Length: 361
Image (tube, rainbow, N blue to C red; front, side, top):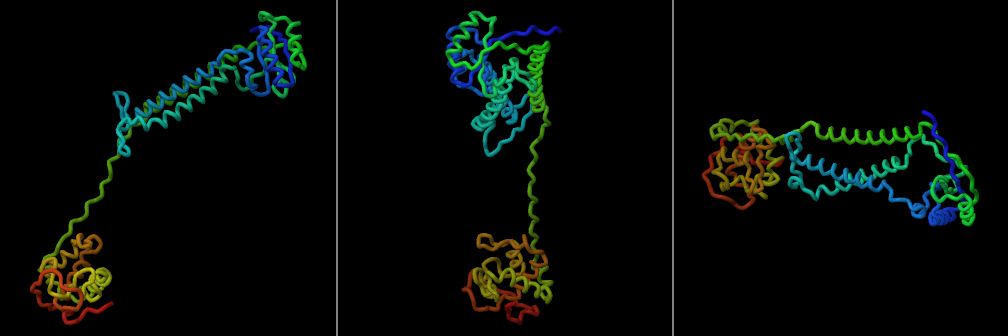
């Protein structure tokens, strides 16, 4: 491909931003063909002075934000369980919110709209201005965009008159004015086009891959809650079963030790009664004072009176030992708490511990 012919521009160079700003206003008012302005930093009002049209970047950012809003709407609607034949979401109710709770969509709408708009504005700026890594300046002017300001005029534009341009620039403190050749190569146009197409295509590919990944994500069924195992039923012993071991001295001793560690805090060290009733008199609140009644009361508890079900924390042998030991206390009438419940006819104790008075550990 043959190299494109080089163009020449008349370039006025200024040392101060106020000078280039006033010179640009005067040049556009005189309808001189201003090609472009070059500055080390953004000069406020210079675009207005050049009478440039509205930038395309604003529209690119607007449509980018619109794509972000629609993307957020699709993702949230999809994940809330709006399903079709090809899509399947996750129909979960979190915190009691209904399906498609649009007020909860607002933060995601905002975040993705701002994200897509910002990325689109940045990408659009590079595309519109033809900026890409490795790009060389079209006009090589010493000091320009470092600490000097330049205003280029196109001699091929209508209304160009070199003498008038030089005279006008001199009135605005021009530091230097000269002809500058444009740096042109045979591949400039093709390279710019390739870069723009590659950038647009890469963006489309990224968006397409993201949508495909969201649509084809594996469907996960909500896991069924793990139910706690039901407590084992409390097995009660009969009077016959308990009477058969009522004379076992080892069992009675074990029951006495367990009584002092678990029961004495409420019933007293001598079972005389404190928070709980006196266990040595002939008055009984629950049952008739039989071994089976004692075992049932210990095992099942009396929740309304504050007594827990000891079957949840003690082993069956410990429950049996407690019931047998408390059975040896019946009828001893240890002075203590006033009688509670109904009087009953207590059985005569025949165990080896029957003749002994309970003592503190």
